[in-house]
Image (tube, rainbow, N blue to C red; front, side):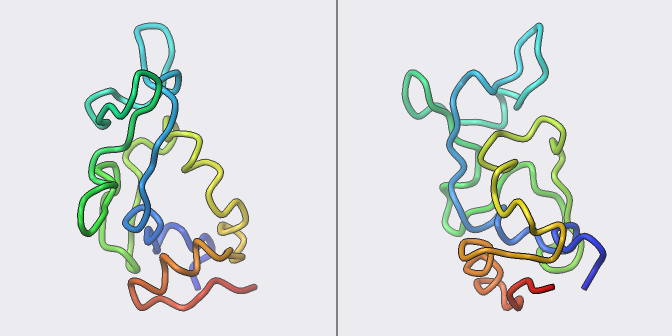
Length: 111
């Protein structure tokens, strides 16, 4: 397993919808998720482009799932991405992480 498993995984970025509040969007004063990478849902919610496609794949995901991936907006990624599987970088998954990895034939994360 790589030192940081998420750098070679990316399954979560190609398995789930990513919805978040408009306050997390970049504006002229604050860094945030670029508006062009989102689609509007409601007056207050947006979704990362590609995450409601079939199959889903976040527009900010670069690379090959299970091999080598990166988030092109990692420092500006939205809250749901920051909060997902908080211990994955330590090799500890959770149910949603394991389900996403299973979709791509990857084993669950374990220590």
